[in-house]
Length: 291
Image (tube, rainbow, N blue to C red; front, side, top):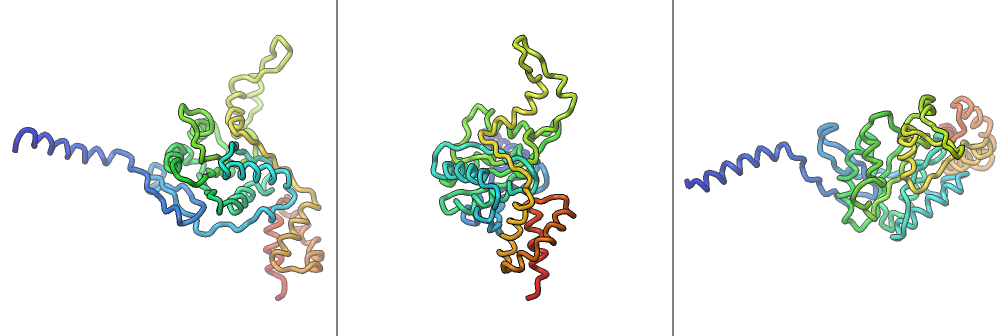
């Protein structure tokens, strides 16, 4: 064996050992397996990421969502622009729990899936992989919404910085076939403390200027181009949603009217008149109705 052959053999063996320490290439998912995917990790937190198709999608439609008309109009219009290749914004949906934030995103997927819309759900702990996910889908013809549900951060969490960069902080432009839709119960995604107010400063013009701590805590929210706020439902709104779902489960008008006192007691026990509570009551009540 010549010296060159010996060198090549040793180099090949060395490369083989190095490959064990290199991150594997992202696997190409089966894009025909569904319209929604979840980002998953094999082998734990530091494992290989892949897109897992969602087999059983929620069938919820835009018409199922009541008493959030302005919010529905904004999200539907922004999503329509995105699907049609027009300029559109990343969206932050905030406000009262159970009022339809996540359901509205799922309903938009069902509305526009036939036009090429796809959804990728990413857990908060996996936001550090956003750049890999975008690279994986950037050359695809479909339009992708990256969905982060119930988003909030504690001080020092890595996903916070990764999301900031993905939204509007990287040297590379955001892929034009990707938007980020996130839901949260609070507008500012980092916890706010009384001590943060100490950073405010009075300017010579009398204006109040936030300090660095406050600026950092609002900077992520500001990177979302569209803010959509959801508010607690009034009693009549809640009962309207209950009626819709009871009708969905086959109850007639008389049965729906008779169910109102029980629906109000159910909400009182839960301490909330939300759309989620209305759906839960309707399932319980309709399931107990005599056949």
